[in-house]
Length: 145
Ligand code: CA
Ligand code: CA
Image (cartoon, rainbow, N blue to C red; front, side, top):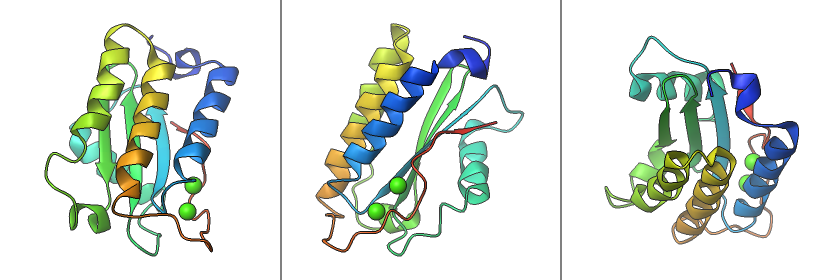
């Protein structure tokens, strides 16, 4: 799994986009997935850089969530905006991370991302329930570098 293009098939990408839509049916939180080959930065800094470059801070409740995958580095990070960090407990993302990592260990990348996205939606709905007039503030398409 060294190339971004080979990481997920077109069909798998569609399934992930579907999972994002499904997760966002429960919460006003906005979830995105970014996949790239590698980075020279620390992954924690890089996820914040990508978050900025995708304008993910442009949500009314500051509740965007980025799933970041560096394929060659075999690294995954989930990063939530400050509106989330203000209200959740520090271990908030643990269940989401576990959903991803268990699958990744077995090479099930698509399923890892899908399970993680759905889990994030479940967890977010307790703090950011979806409102009737919800707007899809951030694209559900996968971002690739
Ligand atoms: Ca929304
Ligand atoms: Ca969205």
